[in-house]
Length: 190
Image (cartoon, helix red, strand yellow):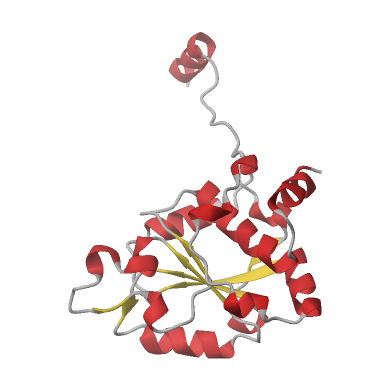
């Protein structure tokens, strides 16, 4: 303990800088907005205020799950943006999928998706869900998520950082709100 205190006094703080949400670039995410653009204006307005996210791991390497868990800690605090994780797909607005679709979890994925209320927004997180990654040609994997479900947003990376995941969720909220990027960023700062 004394060694750590000496190191802190001589070298300074070891904490990371907080995430900079101002660098939101919506062009980094591939997106299929046809389903979101066809939503009723009242539904879009309700979903733009808060999102309930159901996470579903389909066979990832757990790197994406570690980053998703980090979103709930006080450093990233995703709940400040009105985004909460829910245990039931019946309460979820968004299905966040990680990992490629495996043989054993395909039925669970379909049941989870069917249990969600309309509109069903699907976000693929990580390279396994977005493009199958290195697991796509293995015997246990059936392929990427968009071969089985209509995916609205992709957050690529192996794994994507918590900042990128937050930005992906915020891009989703921004398109639901039909607001310009600059107005949205000013709203987040207040």
